[in-house]
Image 1 (cartoon, rainbow, N blue to C red):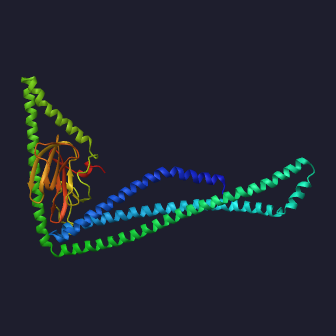
Image 2: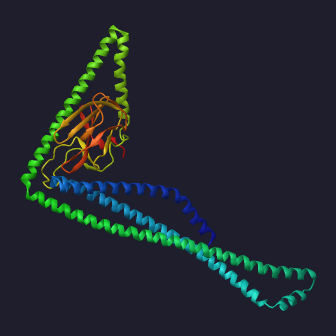
Image 3: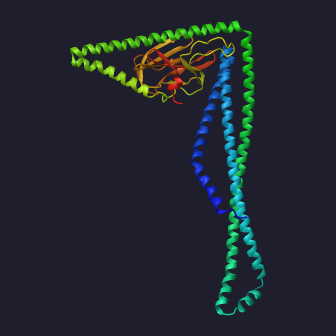
Length: 411
């Protein structure tokens, strides 16, 4: 069976057009999957550590629920990958069908040549066929035909062998794709089992919280006090820094009237601060993450995962789960304004970027001091493990207004 040339050309065009975008989508998908797997590993480690220490059921529930969310996303990515492989398998099968059709055509033509050669297999018949020619021209044409028949048979045999080799090669590729798809399906089944186990764990934690409501309400009250203390300290630091900057600007304005030389040194600082402020604002949605890990504590007003009518303390920042000993890096150029120690948040480094501030809390140690000028990506310290949790608490402020850090960081 010969496949029409137009169909072959269409198939080739589709394959060529799809290759670049297919490769790009595959790379992005693999990147997302790797990130999810890393986040899941981090949370797994924290849950194990939490169970050994004094971690509460409430904090464990938050981790488990984030883990369930990640696991579902990972399963969705696996489903996409399986569909991609199924598409490749179908495409490869189509290629094999085309090669098989070509091989069938070559074999049919070769069979005709063999039959023709069989009829003229006796040398005497060949001689008689030539000698019975009407003239010398016809004799030469018949000699050419017989020679050509032999050559065509050899050429056709070579084409058949090449087609068989190509068919074997593509068949092996198809088997590899099928094995890969099967391995992925088995991995998906394993992830499904993990998801079911985590959902069961979530239900157990919820039941535990429901039984000991008074205990967890007391813990909630303590957490609210800690967060309020953190917010008061941050607002105080920002207010003092803003007032100091206003004083510097006033002094700069006064000195501008009395001495041009003093103005040069004094106003220079104001210009630098304003430039930094503008650059920070321009980079909204582009700032690098201070650590690599999943966000397990979101910004804003939330409600208790079990007691739906109980408001949790308003979160002015986000909590990012990381591995123990993870280094924290500055998200932008700036100046270290303060290093504070706050109960429940351990050490906090506050960095000023003009009128913007970034805060890095729950650090075990710091590698900067007040007044240091720092660059984007510079290490500020390492995250501490508190009650079985290793999480960076990050905040971003515009003056005295807290911002959602996830809107400022790279997607």
